[in-house]
Image (cartoon, rainbow, N blue to C red):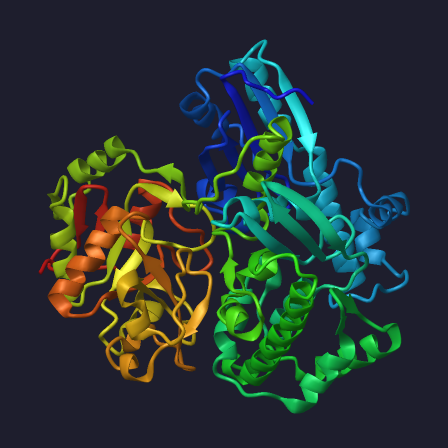
Length: 588
C-alpha cells in the first residue's frame, strides 16, 4: 500500500457495538483529536442500541476537528463478514423477536442463556447494519466531493491497538479478555515496532466476561446496565464460599492460554451455583460471599492465563484490554501475582475504546513503516463545556456565584474542600473512558470518616457498600500504598499502608484497599494544583474523587447536566470552568 502523505486526512473510528458506542477522530499524524462515548452526549447510560455517528452531534464535531478535510477514512471495530454462528442463527430466525421469545434449540455452554446470546447478536447485527449511515449523510452534505474510505477491523485487534499504542511500551505482550468478539472471548498478541502479531485467538462460548455477567446477575444486579461495578464493590465484604469455589473451578479451567469447559460438568455446576442466587427482597449484603468467591475465582483464572502468556516469552510488559480489564480489583494484583514487570491498562479498555483502536489501525495501515514513539495516552479527549453556556447560567440562575479566572479558582475550591464541603468539579475536556480523573469529578475531604456514606446517601443516591477513589499526588504514593504503582486512569486497586488508613478513612474500602488515581502536574495541571493546595491546607495529599453523576446516569456532559446534578443532590458547590456556584447559605 502507498503511504498517504496528504495533509487533511482524518481517521474516524466508530465503536459500532450495540452497547457503549463511541466516536474517535485521529489526524494525519496519528494525533487523537477527540474520543468520547456516545452515552455522554445522550445522557443515556451505555447508550444501548444507539449509533455512534449521531446526526445532531457529528456536524459540530467535524467542523471543529476536520475543517480542512481532503479525505476521510472511516474505521469500524468489527469485521464486516459475520461469524458462522451468527449467520446461522439469523437464517434460522433466532435473532428475531419471535425467535428470541420462542428459542428451544441446543443450549450453548455459556454462563448466560442462549436466548440472551441471541438477543445480543440480534442487537449487534442491527448495530452493524446501520453503522456509518448517519456519518454518510453528514459527509455527503457538509463535505461534498471529499473521498471516503470505509474499513472494518477485527474487534479484539481494535482492543489490542488501543491497549498497545496508548501505552508507554515499545514492546509488550497484549491480552484481550472480553465477553466475546468475532469468534471467542480471548485474544493474545505480540506488540513491537507499532505492529501487532496475533499469537492466539479463542473460538467458542467460553468467556470470563460472560461469567462475570452471570455473577452480577446472581448477586441481584443488572449486567445489561453495567452493574458489574457493584459486584466488585460488594466482594470486599464477603468471604470465600469453598463449596461454590469448587463448583466454579469445575465449570471453567485453564489450559495454556485457553479456557476449557466440559459440557456435562459445566451445566451441572451452573445449576448448583443458581442455589446461591440472591433473593429479590434480600439486601445486597446477603450476596457478599458469592461476590467475593466469584471475584476470587476470576482473579485466580486470569492469573493463570497471564502466567501462561508470560511463558510464551513475548515481553516483560503487559498491555491489557477488553471489558474484563475494567476489573480494577484484580488489576492491582497482576504485577505481584505474575512475572510481568510492567502493566498498562488504557483509560477505556471496554468497547468504547475500540473506536480509537480502530482509528489507529487505519492510520497504521496507511503508514506501515512509520516509526512509533511510545507515549502515555492522555485521557482528556472528550467534549468541553462552552464558556458562554456557563456565563449564561451565572447571569440567570439566581445562585450565589463567583468569577475566579486564571489560578484564582484553585485556592478557593481547596478551602471549601478543607472545610468539609462536597464540590462538583468540571474543568477542561472530559475523560475518555468510564472514570472521572479530575475533569468531571465530585470531590471531597477524605479525612472525614462518614464522608463516603454521606455522598452515597445525599449525592450519588447509591448503595452504602460502594467505595470511593483516592486521588493522590504521585510523590506521596509510596507513603500511602503498599507496593505502590502509578495509576493514571484509576485502573487498579492497591492496599493502603496500615498507618495511612486512619488519615483518609473515607477512601479506604472495607478490605483496606483503594482504587487510586495517580496525579501529576504534566498530566492535569489544574487538578494537580488543587490537590497540592488541599495538601498544603490539610496535610493530606489525597482527595476523595468520584464521577460527576448520580447512580444510573452517565457522567455529566453539558452545563445543563452539571446543574441538574448540582441542584438535585447534596452538592455544596460547583466549579464550572472559572465560575464557582453555590447554594444559598452554603458558602464558607
